[in-house]
Image 1 (cartoon, rainbow, N blue to C red):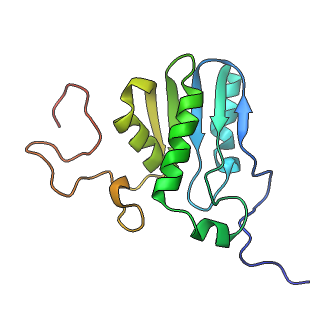
Image 2: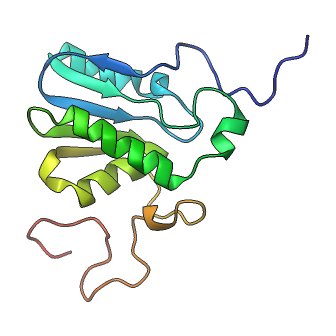
Length: 157
């Protein structure tokens, strides 16, 4: 029997990870075509530090390319926002993303800064266009003196 070339499951269990611990909870977001296994080191370090950790499985990931092809930035953004809702109870969360996950993490920090204590971006791209659209980190028409779409919290860039 031939292997299914569209399968998007590597080594390990692609299920979401939820570990209890003290605040702040670490929200670890995997990359495009990946699973929570990609951010297992982040989860392990959080656990060693006694922190809670959550690594969601983004929509369309961990199954088959057909499922991934049906999803868009808005689906992944909504899932990341829902994961942040869960992670920031009862306190702010530390959000760390890998690749696509780093773009989602940056979106969460920019859109929901009051819920994000710290941001970690691993293997991130400063700019992506299709299919991510508003997921770009560098704005197309920056305001005077500012090139980043990420808020600078009181200092000018």
